Image 1 (spheres, rainbow, N blue to C red):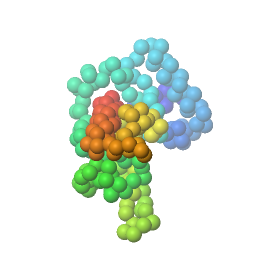
Image 2 (image 1 turned 90 degrees about the vertical axis):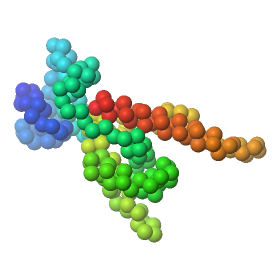
Image 3 (image 1 turned 60 degrees about the horizontal axis):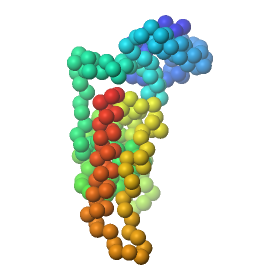
Image 4 (image 1 turned 180 degrees about the vertical axis):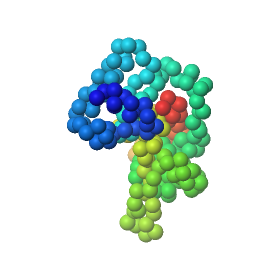
Length: 204
């Protein structure tokens, strides 16, 4: 059975769920997971250059991180996201579902083109509308987003509060904090989030 599972993972270019694999080989999902673990242990014990990784709700074979530089020279490098796209994607990932107006409020610029570009890349999707005047569209990340960054689910994203201390709040009985100081703190948080997303995209 494990040879069949291995063959399926080698043949696919998208993650395969336990349900999908079990349906193909007609066996319980628990048996599939057991054999996936056995394969991974065999790869580790024999010093193979790859592993089976759970990502985007499924399983896929990935080369180990220490060989990324060599593999990168062989295959066409995936298109890198711009700084603006990474910032927009980070806002959506941490605050989804979110409307365009909310994204633009966070970034301070028009985001219609970037949202359209992220939609075309399959990294975000629409997920309904808010029941408010104008019924604005809500956006969320996709399974392709998880696959792009090489993570299993959103819980594997670094916690937003770990990037930097929160923006300064105005003390109730003291002088107001200068607006530029608040902006500088928020910019620092944004830069750290963007850098983390950049690292994830290069590792994935």
